[in-house]
Length: 431
Image 1 (cartoon, rainbow, N blue to C red):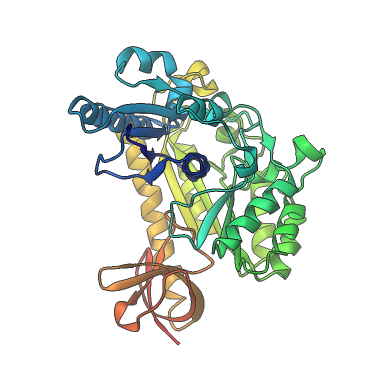
Image 2 (cartoon, rainbow, N blue to C red):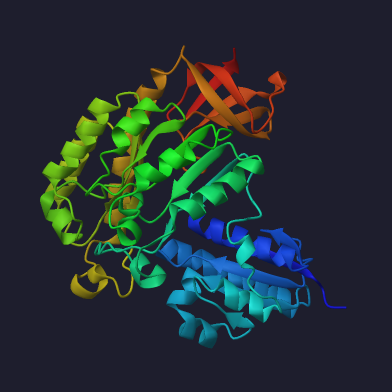
């Protein structure tokens, strides 16, 4: 009898996690025993869900494929399949370079993957998933693709045009997640701000969040990736008046000078960026604002970089991530600009920005000491329970560490008094 065990290995972003979870559900319903990110090579079939976004992610994906090719050659696994962004983007090259993979699939090919494994897509399970995380939080992918034309980004060419999922379908999926014990819903998309424009001819994120608030067992709703241009302003009073929407605004600005925003083909300038950031600060003063930046994009002068440093120093983002520019094939930047800034300069600029942020974070965290926050416990790790406030998203932000002697329960909320802080972590005790 053929080995009916399938291991799905997921690389890359939370959107890939959702894709894997939906596939796991379909496979399990079809009679397969499923595993996720298992390294024990017990499964007869392995499916690697790849990331192809930037160089580091591509390298990790290729290294993972080669590791499982080696396992296949050693007879540890029978069949190896590859899906996701890397194989969508580089299918021909992969087939040529790594022919040992039985078949390559792109993105949005779940039906084809299932057919290859002798199953048909079950429409009744499209809003159901097998969760791969702790179970008390889950990502809700509200759309696919992107209509923006940012010069540095390959996502539109990989994932296609923006396609919003209907409010009804999303509420159904969220309700199912809540029935399965999810207490924190994290809304994700390439761009939450755009949600609804293709489907309803208007921005509909606030309407969607309003409907999700009716699912009473969901205690936190978190919003990720709100594009600055045409920010859905109706969200602001909604967040302000509903304590179950996390005071957490993730708004990736990428840069601040008009010159760089123009070169990057962002559809907002410095004045508009500052206006929306100040509006958010003024109208929801208790919210944290998170952003991401790119250092070393073609055209970034020393003057541009100094202006960016100045802005970060003045505005004091609560959360900040910085990426060194990655010259991605077939993007506008790749085709139209010369990647002339040396890698060591890019890395130095990233380090300078992160050092600035480290000091800001240390000061902000110090102000938390002596205050009590609602904290969700994610896991136990060594001598500590590890949790998060509403101001922090899993995987990307800081955590709250509580000594294990308190015997807390992962997935539960507690009021935690912050007793100590570092640049990127807090320590606390239950009250």
